[in-house]
Length: 580
Image (cartoon, rainbow, N blue to C red):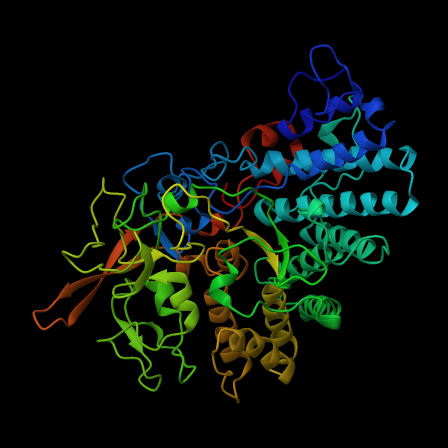
């Protein structure tokens, strides 16, 4: 007899026992699960439904915003304006086992705990039935099976990255299953399962390395398997999941990333896009020899007019400033000529007194001159040129009294709260209500270079291979090579800085500071810059704390398992994540 109360994600598995699926048409039931796998077309359609559990990420968190608003890379302009905004709830410590501020938004799959379990369940249904489905081509059937296997690995990886280890379910569960028998494995067990799945997919000759047909846009490839394996093993080796600093874990991560780079760059099939700034302004092109050879997986999403309206400057039409880059992110960018950090840290807890690297060439009176080109591709700052407002070039004015001035106090949401505006993803040539072509690039080649450098440095120190990986990233951005003679600790610092400036607003920072266990160093506050203009057209710069936060304690390293599942599954109750 089925119990009345079942975990939310497991309620969905009961559909299997009823021989129904999400494809069923109610109330007349014109198609059943059995019918689905008696048809080649419906079988493929079911796999498409598995893909539907992949989140949109990007700016689809509540309220039309980025995850970066709950990191030290930004402050959300909706703070003080929109109480449902994820940052408004998260940054005051609003996360609880019964309320997750990240699990609300315009994307129906933004509740990741539910959507990932749904994806796992759907993938298991598909894998159980695909062998008997009437697929005319054996290679096609093999490819579909590989995609489902990789989708399941993807959902598991994203799930445990957020919530820690979860029971491994490789088959659909029938209604008589006793959910109380579920046991949480170790994080290593889950990673082993994910890696094994990725290896199975990589060895499949029927799954392509790259999508070359527009009609197949959004489907998984071998390259995705390499990316997931690289990321999962890197996290598994990081301090959060490797407290004893087992070098064998770092070696496994380094080997996986090196193998990925070798496979992906063979024959120049994957390579870094030549222009860092332009790379984020449009979707990847799909053909045999694409211009964009960097993107490994891009979220499939139609052109959307919302982006240009929810992350804009007051001088043009729009709804809000949205994500406002932090001074901490600005400080992370090196100087271009010397290749050295401009700011190496802070001498006070509030980050108001930066430690200036005097040998870098940084001039505090002209703080935006000569920085890493990725800075100019990511952030609108005082004096930068916004290319097109009604056909003319507009100079950003964030100084007091300027057209785009800083306004600290809510309820203003149109002006920056930090002194900066988001440039990345924003094509200034697109006018108000026109659709943006920007897409969220979930996996790209640059990340694997960074993954390899980080893991290899921990195993063998800053070898030439480590330098080469980081310098490949820097050189694409027209930055000089790293200086020779760095030791392991110094290289670690440079790799982490490189990761931050290469991948801001790509949801890496949120997880990086957790796996590195530095949340208490990064997430207590963010700062901004207040600028006043002098009569001689020079400027004065004053740093200030733009937001203090209360979501930096160790319990925030891993999200809590939702209350309902904890109350139903005994092992979840006894092994709830630390601090919850």
